[in-house]
Each structure stands twice: as C-alpha cells, then as structure tokens.
Length: 63
Image (cartoon, rainbow, N blue to C red):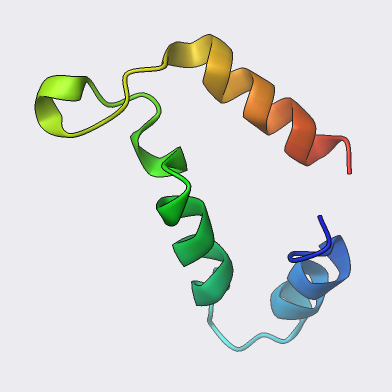
C-alpha cells in the first residue's frame, strides 16, 4: 500500500483532529469502485458480492 501506508492512518488517528478518514485515499477507493462492490447493478453498483469484498479486505489487512 505505497499510496496509503498504515503509518499515515495511525498518524491521522493519533492527531485527534476529528477527521475520521483521509479524503484522498477515500476518493481513490471510490474511483476504483470499492464503494459499490455490494450494491446491486440496478442501483449503480457492481454487485460483485461478499467474496470479492472479502478478498479486497484480506489484501488490505495483509499489508
């Protein structure tokens, strides 16, 4: 995760700024379609299901 190292999220958490997410990182995830993985196609999502969602989360947790 070269673009979103764990250290940057820890620094955000520890900053006590009230910001709960990094806007640039969240925008990148939305641009990749992650926010629509579980949403049915009829509502604009990709409807890829829980398996795909789980695989993405597994990869995120492994770094």
